[in-house]
Length: 88
Image (cartoon, rainbow, N blue to C red):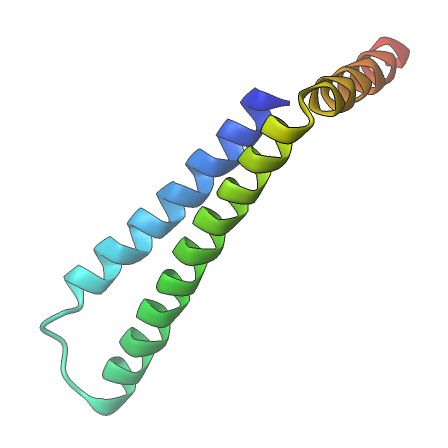
């Protein structure tokens, strides 16, 4: 479960980095439509970064408060994946 979560986080961070690079690459572009698109993209990136940080903090707090529940959930998911893979 941890590696899947890390993979998802790395993918999301890569998307955010790509979007930031695109914004930097189009910084010299002019025009109202380009500026509007840049503004929307910057706002979406800020919101995504804030939500990602908030969600990570909440998840960390829940795991610290209930570590055995987190272990049980991870074991259950591992068991389910194992059963599904064994059937193929």
